[in-house]
Image (tube, rainbow, N blue to C red; front, side, top):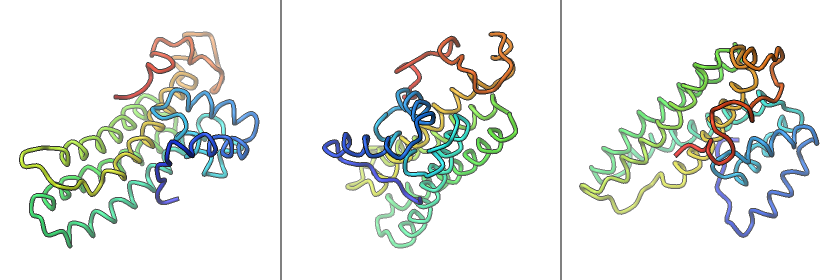
Length: 213
């Protein structure tokens, strides 16, 4: 999926139940736990359920799915950015979109590094890169929101919001993976296997406190 659109609040409850029906029972528990800690739980559930792999994915698998969705979204928006920069007439808008192009490239690069570390077990670096990807996108939104001078229309408003929510899922997943798979964390609780639930015992916050602002 190249782009995951926001859905209206009136449709969320319907999509939530439909999404859950496509996820296996075991994976459903993991998705529910992960998405309960995300910035927008309903969006998180819908996004993950849009990928067939979520039906059998463990926590690391869901992390990879969120990375893939974010990368596809960012890549698609980057393509649109290049077109906008070429044809937009307003010089100030073009200047800010050009800056955003740099941030979107950074987002894609750090998502790739996040994915690489997830696969190789570089859990601490993975969390850092996930945060970088999130804030690269946020920096683009800040550039477009500047009021000196103001611009009439933010052409990336929806795309930036989608990527904000998707990369938030990446950050949330990586925090949970670190809490359940990092050898240092596991050793501190006498655990040996990746995937054993220790997240609730780790002093990195819980519930709504995990959300990135």
